[in-house]
Amino acid sequence: MRLLPWFRENRRDLPWRRNRTPYRVWVAEIMLQQTRVDSVIPYYRRWIKTFPSWKALARAPQSDVLKCWEGLGYYSRARNLHAAAKSICDAFHGRAPDTAAELRSMPGVGPYTAAAIASLAFNEDAAVVDGNVIRVLSRLFAFGGDTKSAAGKKKMQAWADELLVKGLAGEFNEAMMELGALVCLPKNPKCGECPLQNVCAALAKGSPAKFPVMEKKAKVPHITVGAAVTMNRKGEVLIAQRKQDDMLGGLWEFPGGKQEPGETIEECIVRELDEELGIKTIVGEHVMTVNHAYSHFTMTMHVHRAQIVLGRPRPIHCADYAWVKVPNLGKYAYSKADLQVVAQLQSRSAGLKKRKKG
Image (cartoon, rainbow, N blue to C red):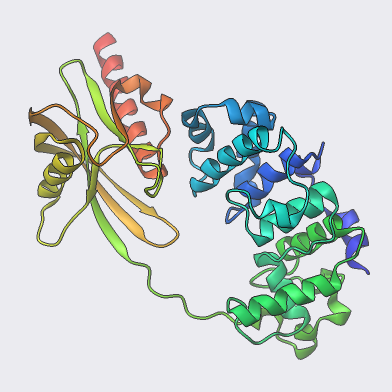
């Protein structure tokens, strides 16, 4: 097959392709779920330096794990990776499961990830099917069906299994994914550079870019959120930790929540801080507005100053809370939206100190 010679000549020099071990493969595959290679590289390097082995990861507190993952998104991946490390060290005596079937029993490991780890780390003849591979296959066979349907997924897996080069599964899987990433692009595919151009049915039809057939995406909902920067007399800021089972579980945030119909942002913040932490507040000046897009919704977060007028914080609808000096806020792990608030507060604090010295 021309694919493998092409891959050997054109493969990217990626950090997880060096010194390949089951642990390093596993970390990379989890990080690469729904995330671009360029975004993953610095996180991967930092992660391997911080947690160089299953044992190091298993022993780390979750706060350190989430802080190392901070900004990469889809934080359940970090929690699952942490849980897998504990399971491997406790139940598997430090040796990772080495078959796709066993791997699928581990936290955060689905069919694609199991096949990827099994083939790359243990040379099992297991074919991977991710977004890049689906695009390549749908064009090779000019598949006009819905690749996201049960029948479409089954067809993609069957073709991948059929094409798999036995004994070289890891290299074949990487080659297919690399072809989708570098040549068989979603728009303007580089068909003239493709090692499979002579057997591509979509190219023969003259319409490779029409595959895979894409359904129109439903409109993504938008929510409005109110959040509070609440300070005490010591100049400490109140932050709250999300419950493990919540979205962004384990991360810290400036307390607040979704605006209800008929509420002003100020009313929203007062209600949320009462429900979440059991405190009565008055809401003051606007600090900033943050716009952020998640995979399934977009959000506008209005951040205001708030002052406690009655009660002391207690974790009612959150996992924990903390009073933190502004320079120390960065020691905690936050979502990208809350990180913008941290940056704003620290910038203002540094500016005030500079003016006082001047």
